[in-house]
Length: 134
Image (cartoon, rainbow, N blue to C red; front, side, top):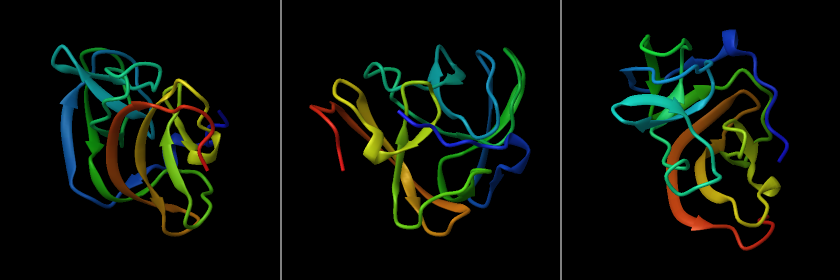
């Protein structure tokens, strides 16, 4: 899967900002999920791992507070293709939907509305892809 090349310092959320406590190291722009009451990086390698709660707006290490966003426009600090759907990748980052391979659990993160903005709308499919999606 070809992950977006993101600049963490350029990640800016324009939707509702929420706070949480980290259960592991996270960088701004990474999709996060809850695990034992704390937030950790998400991954699409398992159904549990693909349960994205939002995208980190700040980063940090275990037990540190951080800010994340669940919906609305977000600047991911990357160049996006307008109209393209973006999903959670196996590395815990963000990739275009075209790069999904078989056996990866599909979690849609949103659709690019400009070359800089993703309109977040998290959809956890609960199923693994049977093959490439386009």
